[in-house]
Length: 151
Image (tube, rainbow, N blue to C red):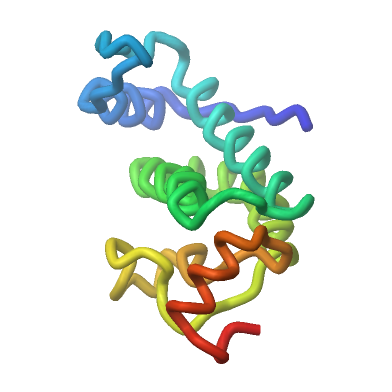
């Protein structure tokens, strides 16, 4: 899907400032600095989240650790949304809503967050959802965590 987003100059500056504080390294250990437009970064976050959701929809055959790493992508989106003006959040949320809906349809709710880092945060509802279709490793881990309450 092709996403389009136009940010105000103020929103662009907020995202640029936030990005300048991020520290990333490539696979060789070299520091990476994002030098593109803020809109392209935000669109990239949506595309990454959509890719994760597509994988979940097909059946998630990786481990719980992989799932946690993939779910962190939604945290990044949430963090960026907090930077945006009301109009910016609304525009971004409109692009995000169909992806989140697909995620909800492909997952089910569990009693507590799958990561202790997400405990106590009702706003980060995605941490309380697991794939309906998952591999044996993840199913075994979750069954051990929740016992027979997993369904």
